Image (cartoon, rainbow, N blue to C red; front, top):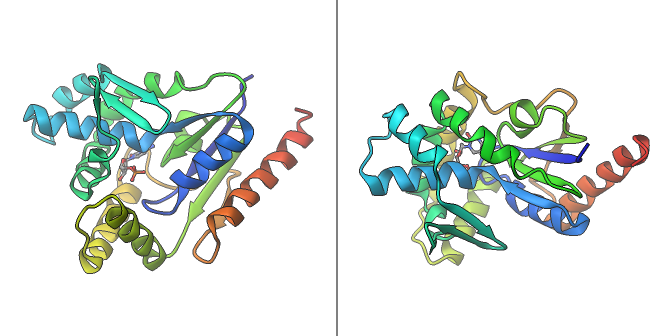
Length: 222
Ligand code: DC
């Protein structure tokens, strides 16, 4: 069986960075599932589809012309890795992610990322719904303030405007929506290791996950 490490957690908890460093350290593939919801949201907005039109958005999700090339994400041949990081797209992604038909439409695409020698998958429901048989499940959190600080820096670094108060408000609303939705809500999977990164550097967080991984892999004789 191809091993999977799932890293779930709220927005801006640092899971994306931790997941990509862990994947790099192990030579595993990486699934940034949030990007798939963001890409679907971007496609819907560009096609003028209403964000509550579940059937139309699910159809877009099923046929996303997406290619991941290292850091680059191509949508129909166009680089969109920066465009999908905008707050407006993140918020739209959180809205369409609450639609069951859209979630179902993205399942197969996500399973397709599971390739030898292994996969690190980051998102909200990686350990609970998409890869329930994962070898190691991590639930990564950080305080709202720490996450707002990180998101602020990320936006400024990418040259987008950012406002701390609006960001805090946004994060809280998004947390509530992601946690309270009926389908695949954000919650730790059974058996998940909890990691609060508020006071940790990226290196410390990565080291902890790798430590857990080596321990699990050792126990399972991999
Ligand atoms: O991780 P992110 O901020 O890029 O995700 C954007 C939105 O997509 C998030 O607010 C909720 C949704 N999402 C989801 O519902 N399930 C996932 N596995 C990943 C993301």
